[in-house]
Length: 376
Ligand SMILES: NC(=O)c1ccc[n+]([C@@H]2O[C@H](COP(=O)([O-])OP(=O)(O)OC[C@H]3O[C@@H](n4cnc5c(N)ncnc54)[C@H](OP(=O)(O)O)[C@@H]3O)[C@@H](O)[C@H]2O)c1
Image (spheres, helix red, strand yellow):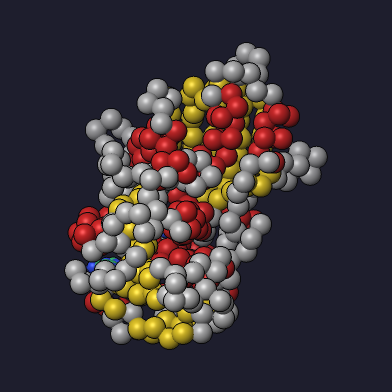
């Protein structure tokens, strides 16, 4: 697994959440040969946030070529300094003028900012890779996981289009489909039942801080502070904090359902999901039950997953060793284990798997940078 070069103070292990909020922003000191005159100009929108910082880490790790890079955030952060690949940058306030001369803009500042500034960036000629849910279900906007459906954005290349939008799927969808798609390709999934165990980092740095603070408070016998979530998070778990809709599903669950259909280009696949927040600092886990049209044995499934790009099989029954959020934190690969025949289904028509993935990395920044790589 490829490790992130993000500084230790930002790795979101216990003790790190508060450090994240206490900027100065980190220094990415590795000098790379990626600063080149013939390369695209970049903008990172939301550069001071959890995903924005990971964008910088991934761009550096993968030696993404660029001739210039704009660091954009809100007025609150304007003037802050970031050192990236041995160059000093000043964070600028995001405005309608920010995208002049920008070729690729990586957005991670929330849905309302994407809705307001995404189209302006496109008008200026930039190709926007957006991490929010603002455009995911727009039929004209490709929703892409590079290992799964690269063909959806095959018509968009730097130099051949003037301005375009590409959406990054929801983090739970990416992690689930990284594991389910290689099996779907072989045996065709008819129905998928997903249960998620989602980390604090998915709700941003402030949620991580709250989990850390609450843990200390509860151990000290104090009343836990509840600001980000309405209920106690430490030593507890609860239904995902996304708004609950009239059909009883919350928005996170419906994203998984709708995005899977769009990415697989299969409006008939049956998907249901239950999304839960668990008191884990970073990286999501998901239990996935699959029902297939064609038979698929567990040994064949394990072999398929072992050969799937971006997937790491951790499936040691003898040692009871399977994927954990800690093992995948700050890693690129999605880990899969507990690969077993679903005994509630006849024959080899059902499988259960357990998946863990770093949702700030493959679930957000890494996936978006891989999309940007496909534009070159
Ligand atoms: N965290 C995840 O695992 C994850 C995964 C997939 C997708 N996403 C999506 O990525 C986006 C960011 O998430 P995050 O966790 O990184 O959030 P975050 O840590 O709260 O960071 C938010 C970023 O947006 C910027 N921002 C806020 N208001 C702004 C404005 N008016 N103009 C310009 N910039 C503004 C913030 O800048 P300031 O510092 O100046 O406030 C900060 O850089 C969200 O859409 C989220 O749904 C997150």
